[in-house]
Length: 199
Image (tube, rainbow, N blue to C red; front, top):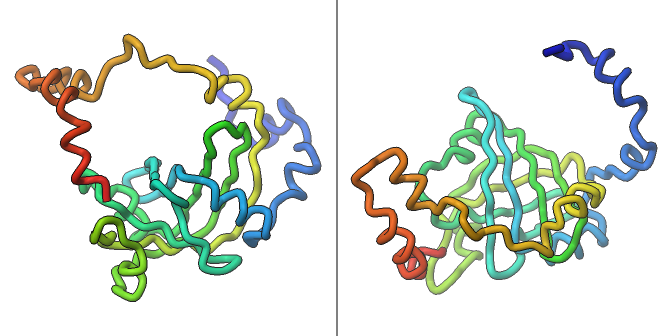
């Protein structure tokens, strides 16, 4: 197949960007962006490191991030599986992107910037869930803030569908690699297992 290898060839295929797609970008969290992000309970964090790229979902039962000022966001690193791929990347390369989604809304808000990690108790202890605190907080400095047009979510019908029936489960994924793994026990017991490990 033909491979596109130059920016000139790419530009010839697509033409100039829509003007508002460039002029809508702001370096700061404006009052309207702050209101929108405050409604988000879910964000995808993307990073880059020597081994490649990584993206992981982050969620909370309230606002998923805290906006400290118009250029600074705090994202608590709640308990996970300790792969810490994104955290390792941030330590070595500060570039990050965030993609915020709100259920029922077809727009997405994106932030590009830089980040560092802190385990400062003055920061981590401001986040509490059931007496638990995150080990670290990701401190993001915004460079670009903008909304993504709604076409992708409209096309997918993301908020109006439930396509989960018949899909492989997490237990199925593990069993495909480790034949003796008890996929059914893992899947049926996961909700109870996760209860005490959410934060």
